[in-house]
Amino acid sequence: QVQLVESGGGLVQAGGSLRLSCAASGRIFVGYPMGWFRQAPGKERDFVAAISWDRSTSDYADSVKGRFTISRDNAKNTVSLQMNSLKAEDTAVYYCAAHSGFGAHDIETSYASWGQGTQVTVSS
Image (cartoon, rainbow, N blue to C red; front, top):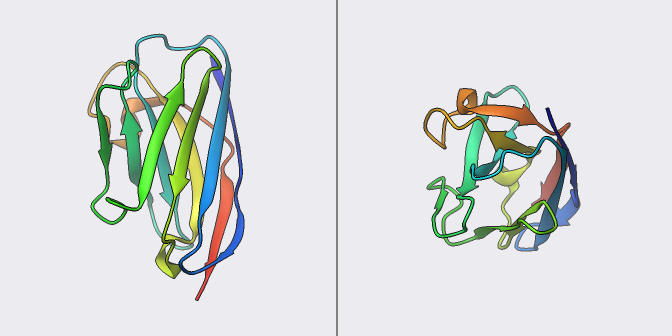
């Protein structure tokens, strides 16, 4: 089992930036993508971004394209999400996830391990 711990959330004004980090330990899924999802109050958990093992491919939800950037450092077992030009609608709990190796990268059920989440609040 992979253990994932997110950090970097907080309160920021609209237009500001935050950088989320995710530290992985345990049985790392070598060769598999990593992803970020988010869940706003009263809503389902949604895909935000994913990155392949070799960093050659990344994908983003339409709502964050051009504003968010996902990256990973396999030597350090970390995944990051740089969030710029934040909007009030980005307010949510953000989760880091390790892909199972099966299924599409933007589907929640394709991920085998999840962090506990970190709160991001954007004030307008």
